[in-house]
Length: 157
Image (cartoon, rainbow, N blue to C red; front, side, top):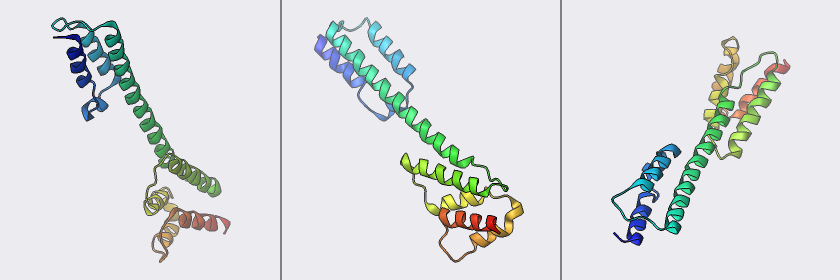
């Protein structure tokens, strides 16, 4: 098989598809090693071989980059989920909630306000069940600002 045809066959192997994006960088390295060791095809020229390696390394870098971004997004959401209600420091709790939500919005995660409000409400301990019911059964639209305002007002009493 002529070298240029062999090179194009390898380009098809590394073309972007969904399966490639889910594979780990180590899997791509194994493929690269396999391509270098194939005996049944004509050898690639040095420039083609280098280009093929660069394409594979670029693909591995993009997969790794996507994984890092997903890990960062996951960490930001976990930061919000694990904010702990502090009965003796309600204002700190409210501030921590607002900061965590701001970080989510900054990275492009914008959950619906009512869901965020319910997540905040579930952080409130059962000792404050009456306050939770007042907030949940209010005739006003449920959002984080409304919940936080109620908490601050309750704290000032």
